[in-house]
Image (cartoon, rainbow, N blue to C red; front, side):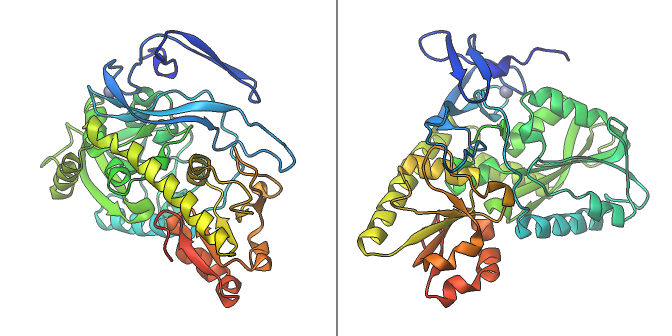
Length: 400
Ligand SMILES: [Zn+2]
């Protein structure tokens, strides 16, 4: 390996330009042709362009008047290998640590049970985990099953990546590192939010700085094949609308090839059009429709004299509120359980982030939940909202 990370440098129409990222102390120059983060291919399409966006993990202090620095946010689909990816990321990660949603914790336990049931988590096996900065570690669960965590860089029979790989700017190097650590006869477990889900559910705001890749089964199969690996089985979970856990091994170890679960996953993704730029470009229409819908709904609530608050100061909320042009006149506060986000405001707008304990004091007619997976959890955690006549509303569906 050792190929330079050309993918972080990107061509914009009109030739080279310099983008100064004020506020982050970093400067990114944009020049040269695009190169795929996985296969280094140079042909592809920009399929989603969200324009200039603030870094979704840069939460300014509430008294910071802005304007917040903004950066282009685009998704590119590689024509060679089919990997959907973030074009460029001049931002620096600085997300205040969020809380781990109960849905993520529950899914981890479910997944470990299912993988264990398939015989892929033998007692005493060594395990290496590549985690996500957003939490969701499986190590506690695996240790309790008798697996033995190894030190950084050491080989293991079970190499696990749970939403970690998407955070690597150089996708080829990151997957090569993971596959190289799989001990002979071992398994690589990759869990990812599926691009097919993003298309099917119109989740355009899954695109964010810091998340460099949006995987489909065909694209991951191609990445694995370049490392001599092949998917052998897979599981599907409801998390984030559709999350996949893929188990892969060395092609040399593979007995019967991909099982029925992998074959139907590949077929489903192909049917969803994961490699078709025209299909992915539909996310652009989803973005416009969702933003307009939210703005009109909030304006109608305001006209009717009803107070609406938000819940979940996540990246998806940042992009949605910004595109919808929502400020604190329409949405006076977004509640978030993370203590690290208290006293801050949403990037790119003047909406403060508040403690969820303050929700009931505003007597909201509705609380918009920006993360569908949190809906059941917050409804149970803050019964005072419904007790005071308020309702919880899924911000994507705009219905309770
Ligand atoms: Zn590629």
